[in-house]
Image 1 (cartoon, helix red, strand yellow):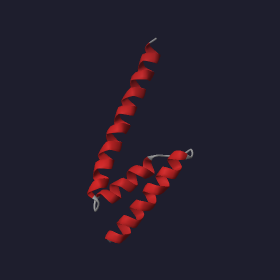
Image 2 (cartoon, one colour):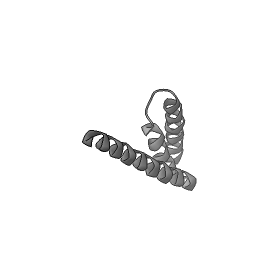
Image 3 (cartoon, one colour):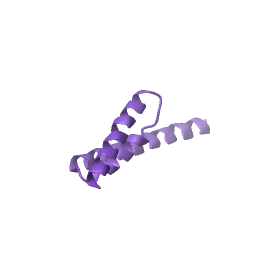
Length: 71
């Protein structure tokens, strides 16, 4: 089960990076990091960093759109 989880996590992570560079979704990167974080402690740190960065980005976009709407 561990080998399957690591293999699928690596495929999702690498595929997500490729799709991020091309027009695509970064959610595959997050899904890959979730699977890798069970067995690889360093992936847990990357997952926390990516979640924090995505949260801050979403807040900035929300604030920008709200201020634009109120003008």
